[in-house]
Image: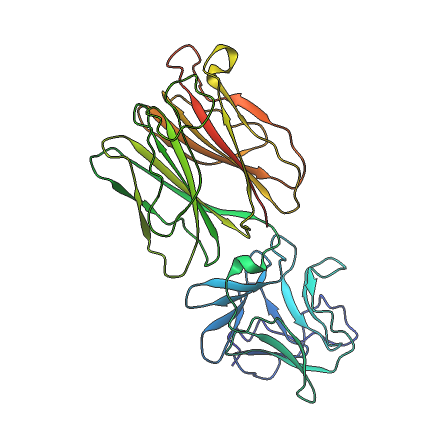
Length: 369
């Protein structure tokens, strides 16, 4: 039997509005197959005969192929957050994800073909066949890799954080939730104040993007051996074999703060810029998240380190994704869409400008698809 409740799957009747779902019950079909005039609705799925792949109609309206071994999404209709509520294999040969609007949220573009069935194969490929058992369409996902290779937009997935002051040279931080193989993980590590020699390596599997340390509140350039505040940014590509907790390097005997953000659809050629406060006058408690030229589908990220911890204000039009505070330093991460060109955003990093003024460093990044 089809791996859904039989009283929900119903035929699309020829000559009747495609939105209609009332009709004669279909004959039983294989759990991996959808036949002509059959409808899949939200929260239903097909499963390959070997149990390794599922075609899922998610509650958010998106239809995906998911590999069960690591829960990686290998294909998507990209119809999330739409009115789509059914996947229809129509008698005209077209496969479509439809809602109550006139236009489908997604379609295969195979009209006027003598379609017979659609099957999720053991290799993870979703294939449509005609009445002569000839293949007429496929997703091309045979033994497909990771979700990020299919993404057209960079999206935030989740985040995690930790901090530790001890004599050890390592610390633990959790892998963010809901991460799929192929997502890119960005790790920020902050050390300070009065101990800002942040490690040059975060440990196995992490690649250093940028590292800055300073000696005093008036420093405006990166140093390789500063002894006050330090921040470093690393990245790695998530894999199914990743542990639930990463062990990363830290500065012994100093408070070390760390945060990871997981981004889906990220490419490797992301731009990075750095901004310091100038330690005097009106900028001694303000800093700037840098703007970038608009890039379709991208995300701008601002990663902030500061000492003499104070309450933070979220900059206008940015979303705060993670914050970590100790008694003497802080780490915050903000994101915003990078699809359009935006200017620099200057904001207070000290909620009480009358006391404990310190310094701040931020890395502004444009993560591109």
